[in-house]
Image 1 (cartoon, rainbow, N blue to C red):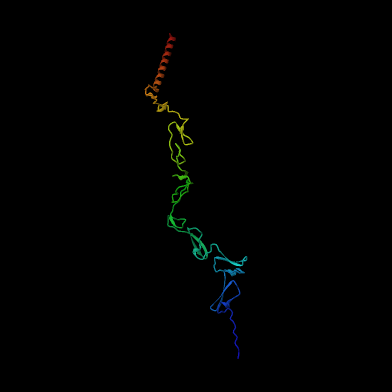
Image 2 (image 1 turned 180 degrees about the vertical axis):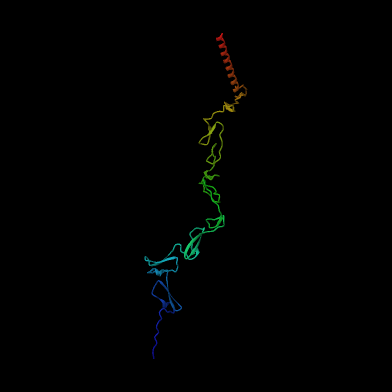
Length: 262
């Protein structure tokens, strides 16, 4: 009688226990009586980069010699699906082609442009020329003024219009006048009305204040405050007097010539 010997078949298994390959960086399993040895990407005891393959084409897998652990760094611009492609620009559309990201501009209808939120809106060119504040014409603003300053209609920041303690002048460029001074007065640097040293009374016959009275400049009444009326000298009287002097002078000359001839 001959005894039969049972010999094991290499790679054949009944369970995972039959598939231990002695490598701590592989996950051993039995499938359909065949041993499978998958690399463990989180293996803490790798000796080569090949042991660190995580199956993702967009990661750079390597064994870090400093701690003998597997590392998986992302490969820039590599993708598996379109959603992997994002360059941070809401107006760009990402496309994954052969594991490589490409980008195209978001298409809007004619007359529209892409806004920062990735939506389409009517096209508008902001206008902030010579402006530091106020609207830009497209729903936005050219800037904001500092606290205590206001923006005028020209888009220029100016100190808030406050006329407290001011009799005249404007508190800032773009502000309306706080008041005006009377004739013969001027507005000083403190925004107060003071006597104007350069004021020259109107000598052309206009009404002006003369020692408490009103000189009409045409021979009219001169009220001195006492209630009486006195005849005022007029420019016309002065002219007539000069004419008489000229006539008398001419007569004197003619008389002298007559005396010389006789």
